[in-house]
Image (tube, helix red, strand yellow):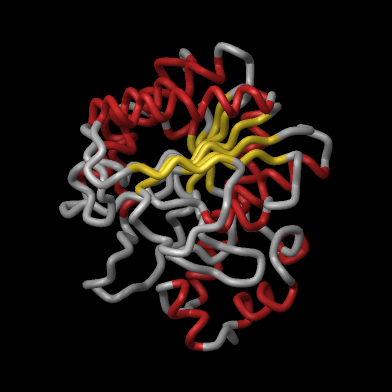
Length: 299
């Protein structure tokens, strides 16, 4: 197994900020401590360059982010203050997604312990997302002939409006989002398939909906799946609104991995959201995702 990480670039934020800046580092450290992954299976995410980023984002927006000249209201929409480390982390998240995509195409599975920045649109960021990592991974796979059809399976509790908007007119990318209907973003873009769930949806109803969604993805016949494995549907999550148990989330991950591995379709993950307090509950759920991948792919 090869997983990429970007937590060398920890974003400076106020102590009371809602974004859990240490989440991905704590998950990586816990995986190493518990023997779930070895040091040789981790690789620092490379930094995406400007020429890469403008494949999916407008040059004016990219330059404003890189140079720190975004207007205050644009930074407020992202939800974080600008800093050099925010730029580095955002570039690493993009680079990690592309590197993980390439690894998945070679080996069948990979991912990064970051990413899933699905609220970033072509010309603005939103919801803690500066640049869109899956958009760049998908666009790169298509442009380089590594895949001709890419599916995004977005199971974060929040709808992936950035993914939906960026690929709205691209028939080579199928975007499926299963999310809490009443949660952020409150103005949703139309994915190829959106399944919005009512508040407090529990394991069984969630998994039934997921079965339906995965059937639709298989009907698209993708060459590559980018899986947004956000753990914020967990019942304990502060920003979730759904009521999945740890067991339900683990069953979700196994279902995704088994569905595509059985058909030889490569999968690359981005760990997406998770906002429990204490954050250790989120970390435990992320470890369960990686454990499910190990079990299904026999890694």
